[in-house]
Amino acid sequence: MTGGAMLIRVRAAAGRLARRVGGGQGPERRFPARPRMVFLILAVHGRSGVARATLNVASALAETHDVEIISVYSGRARPFEVDPRIAVRYLVPVPFRRLSTLSPALARKAAQPSRLLGDRLYSALTDEALSRELGRLGSGDVVVSTRPALHQVTARIAPEQVVRVGWDHFNYPGRQRPRGGGTGIRRAMPGLDAFIVLTEADRHDYRMDHPDARIEVIRNAVLWPIRTERPERDSRTVVAAGRLAPVKGFDRLVDAWSMVEADFPDWRCRIYGTGPLRAGLEEQVRSKSTTLELAGYSSDMMADLGRAELFVMSSRFEGLPMTLIEALTQGTPVVSFDCPRGPGEIVDEGNGRLVPDGDVPALAAALAELMADRELRTRLGVQALKDSRKYAIDQVAARWAALADDLAGNPERVAATVAARHARGRARAAQGSAAE
Image (cartoon, rainbow, N blue to C red; front, side, top):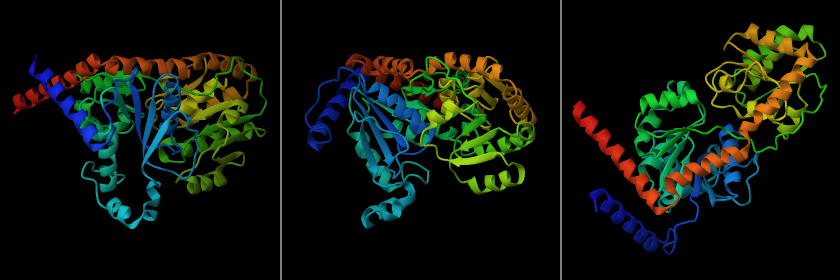
């Protein structure tokens, strides 16, 4: 037996003993028939695309796997339904902004900085909870972290026999910006067994940085049923959706809409979403438009997209935008800036219009072209519906299941995954020594 194999067996035995003594998992369990999927997320009840994408995949995998979600924070709102087959564990029983409502003992811990992560969202309280929850996992478990700080903590403290997968929901260029999370990903990568990105361009860039890492593309999926036929519509409404934050570029959309509304007085533009820029956008709308509305949170986005004539995306950065994909599932043509990095892989001349990033007059011209031509909108919408089928949840879930089986489908695959992680660590250590 090699030294590495002996080390794996000794540590596995130690982990089994620790679980029996500590009671974290009770008696030693049998290796599961399918890997257990554990998603680690900041706030499962947030209104972000990360929460929605995670719940979509988790719900689909619950058909064939045991699935659990570990949410660092709880939340009062419930914008997305959680499948009842999914176990949800909350590490902190309140939202981040309501830490002051915790008991005095917990509030004191929440006020102490994290020793694991240099991020204000984490504290001594989350350190303790993350260590406890990750520590109870074992062989046959696949933990999927969903943001750079959580990639780091998983790579650092998850038990050795737990397979670690990082799932990034943003794009590579954005991660390289100040405070974009790129440093956290670089620190975590040696301890991750796979890293999932949303586009081929992102895979190329990460492979250049981490040639020994396993980088895979698995696209976001929609849980909604994809229409078989595109319904007729005559709403004369253009829809946009997203958090009212700088990255979504709704200020650019207001400018573009102000260029076309005089020629289309019976059309309306509705921006769905909430966020910190609402007051500033309201002021901009009052000064520039009479037919654009900040519509707030949508309780039925599928219906709103299904009634819309067009969907418009004005973002400065994206990952693989969920709302854009969801628009396709309703047969709604898309007009979008070619921002880094997702729209260019989704939108083409067959299902909408893609214009140079930041070219507001070009965005206005593309909107005007489609608003003026009902037959063109219908043709593009039919193709949008066809294109959306590649994002069907069953296809995306099958990719996740295949990845989990490959990494953790049986004890031998787990051992191989752990051995490969050790080999990467030794190679990086050797490179570091040589550089010195």
